[in-house]
Image (cartoon, rainbow, N blue to C red):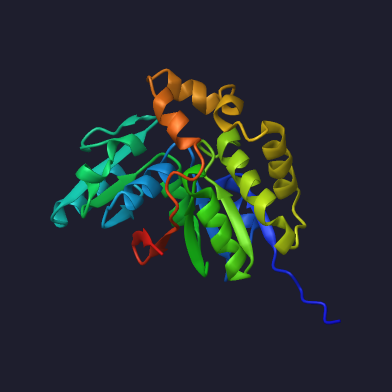
Length: 241
């Protein structure tokens, strides 16, 4: 019997740790549950032409000015950034509003991590909203995978790690896992019992965003499979597979 070597599966818990992982040729999944990757997934499934992730507010404004039919959006510390038109909420972008528009987006954590990845074969967007579609796609690709958590200003956070664990739990049978972060994320997912939003109510980010009245946003972001698509980075644009 031929022993076919399985690809590797790792979880990076923070952008501050990304330099410890070999992203060359790997599939890297960007995870920022509250709320960048959830917003990107929802906007694209609801008909956005593309999402352009940028690192700074000034770049967001200047890029939007060059693109007809674009919307500038983003947040800093959970609030709409000064000078931008819209925020980082998936509920802001229903089909009748976002269809055929370009969303130029900057966020505190998620878009920053995306720009840090070097040499990956693919950069994908992960959220509870596309959990099954993403997991199925990763199983098909048969490549090394790094699940990258955007965290909160480089500090570990619960929601991104919980989602990484949900993915690990679904696809682990097809991968070689020599990564304690992946094991820990899987244990976290098992501990949640699949009740994501209740599990996350004791998280620092949930409490931070609750102070701005964003409970509905977070409940939406913690709902599995509302948007069964796989967004990926193509050049400077995030589009659908």
